[in-house]
Image (cartoon, rainbow, N blue to C red):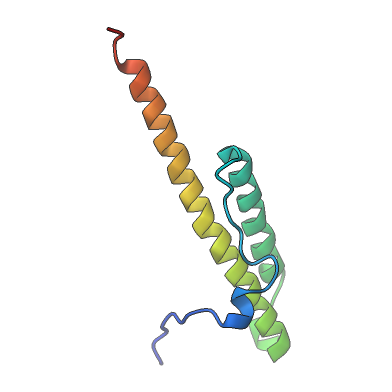
Length: 101
C-alpha cells in the first residue's frame, strides 16, 4: 500500500472564489467563528452526502478535493479564532481577579 503524503494545494484551487476564508480583526470574533463553523459544516455535508468515491468521475473527484480544501482552510481559521477567544477570556478573567490598588 503506498504511503499518503500531504501535498500543497494546486494554484487553481488556492485562488478559487470562496476558498480563502479570512478573519477580519475589526469585527467581533464570535460571529466570525459561527460563519466559519457553518462553512465547514456545509462543505463537509456537500462532500459526505451519500458520496460513493468509487462511483464518481474525475471531475466530481476534483470538486470533492476543492470542497475539502475549503473546509480545511475554514477549520484553520476557526482554530485561530477559538484560540483568540480563549486568550481574550483568560485576559478578562485575570483582570477580574487582580485586586484594585
